[in-house]
Length: 32
Image (cartoon, rainbow, N blue to C red; front, side, top):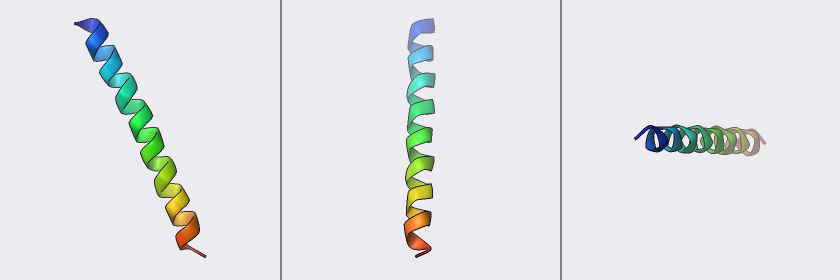
């Protein structure tokens, strides 16, 4: 059970990092 929770946390962390990275890229290209 603990393993599943750890994997879910890791997936959420990676997903949020990619999400914010894409948002910052879109904001950078949108400001042009």
